[in-house]
Image (cartoon, rainbow, N blue to C red; front, side):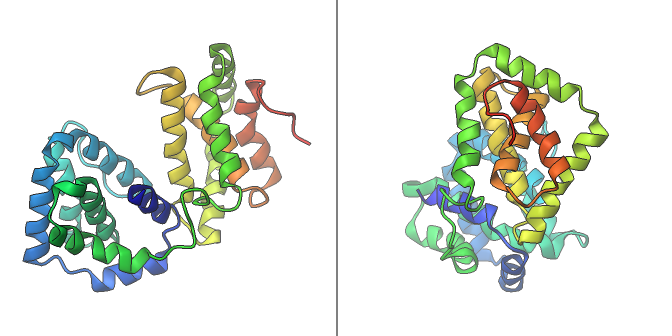
Length: 257
């Protein structure tokens, strides 16, 4: 449950929270040692955690570690970025999220003192939150997530039509419509909601196709429709129509009013 709470705070993370985190960030020796101990305890899950780190690099707009890097090096990657003059202050505001993730994932494997040291900065900056796992994308969260979860029950022919329709839309037009989603979430004050929802769509598409990675066009189709649901009333009408078109082509939704 605490992991779900962490993900909810990422989707609702504000620039003000990042600034507070950056101002109080201290990467002292006790914290570094606690981090090393936790990472060692989680050695059995390095690959899975490294995959999450890659996902967050995309979500937060950070430089990506090499896909071929050792999982342990990927885990160290965000902490190395704090010395980069271009992104250092920004990364300092995000690192409490990474530390909290390590502490939460380690669970009973880590001493309580290490858990407290690594998770406290995130809890101070992000908790209590007015958002929960059921409202992390706002008041229409459940409608958006339902559109994703239902895909695993769609026939393959439906998914194929989604892919085909997405391919018929030019990259320029799709990217322009997608950008209105990111601009809307930024205007709402929650700059990471669009990307967090995108990664929800990735998981749903991979489950539906039973393969990873899967067709990017299917991911786009699922994300576009979910974004229209989640951010209803916040997007231009033409963007809503284009983003929802591939999903609707699958024939599993009511026609637009």
